[in-house]
Length: 424
Image 1: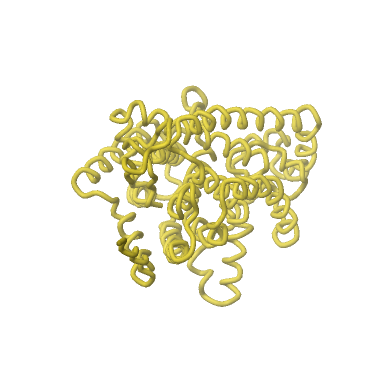
Image 2: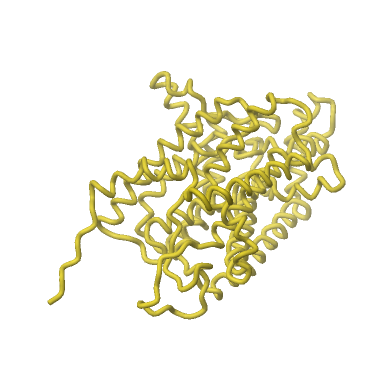
């Protein structure tokens, strides 16, 4: 999740005109790190912030549900594109080096995700699914914006239905069903390994088949000129418009064309088991849609619910992610010093992600009361930002970022870059 560099003329990474070769320098895209920092805070809001179901000011925190994880995934795709050349995809030996690095990071992320899941915090961990996506992204490193954007559109429209058809056959589900997650037991035998692979790709809490939609979208964004203010303005306004359109069309499909009625009908028997109406059952259990919508009716694919991985969820979340990335680049160019703390946090996103799970496992037992509060959100956020600022100032690369970089950097020595021939 590192190596986010581009050619630009300012440390903020935003320019309006082409830069002459003599003035080019490799700089970090500050706005990308700011977006990562916001995603981290959004994750803290979901994991330890107040419960939106409580109403009042806590209802504001509902905006983070699902969309923070989607922003993380899109940014992972951006990082993959920037690692592989940014606007101009690498070729030959350079691309092979990136392929080997991604292939090395994949099992490391899977192992790290397994370890975090084994902490039994009760939270869903996405890292193992990222590892699979890194492998799936390798064949796409050669492509530019048009192909990757087209792949994202096709994936958003088609993958949810492929997932629906597969899951309806191998693991049909209703609403009150917790999708399976990967565990160490899935590596005990060949049959268990196959089960683990199915979980990672199709039936798990962040199935890679659908998660690739966000990776494709992020890779397309990473192939754009994110150092251009014009491009970033288009991402900001265009992304916001796409997200609004997604909500509007989903509302028409569910509320005006009968999609919601079909969903309620499919919930009738399940709701009766709990002694409540279908409307009550759905209201109380929307979070169970996570990653794999129920297979009782295709109408579930019309919902815009965050983290549901429906076509409308993809359109909305990608639009929001594009708007956040474009907006953060623009803000970072104008208010560099003000957003530096967020950028410091975003530059150490893997460490911030992993260590917050460790902190949760040490502070609370699974299911313990009192975890969710505004105070805990503010405490986690403040500690993470201050620690990231201090680490950048006195050490540099985040601890887990440094480890991942070192462990996956061996292709650089196996396939050294050719030495340019001397002139004259």
